[in-house]
Length: 114
Image (cartoon, rainbow, N blue to C red; front, side):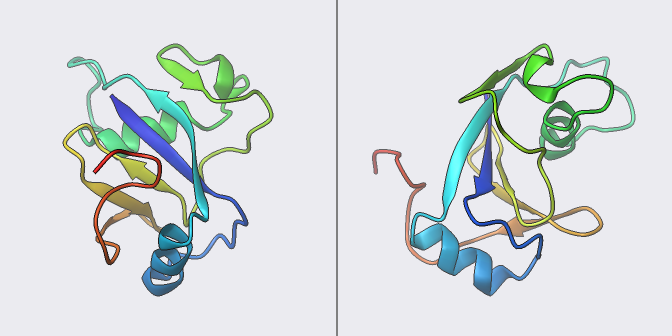
C-alpha cells in the first residue's frame, strides 16, 4: 500500500530543509492510500509516479479513482512539495521534475507507531 502525504500549508516548493521542518513539526497529513500499480502499467514503474497519477484530477475527481482511498473528499491534487510513502517505506518528495528521496531527521512517520 502506498500513502500520499500533503503538506498542510502547501508552499509548492521542493526545498528539502523546509519539507523536513514541516514533516518533523507534523506539517503533513496522510490524505490517501493508493494500491500498488498493476504489473501491466507500462512506462511508469515507480510507485510514486503511480500515486501521483492516481491522486490528480485528470478526467474526474481523483478521489473517485479506482484503487484510491481518500481520507476525505475535499482534497487538492498531489503537487510539488508533497510526499509519497512507498510500500517499502521509502519517502519520496515531489519535485518540479520527478522525485527526490526524502530522509527527514529523526525516525518514523507522523502518526505511525515506532
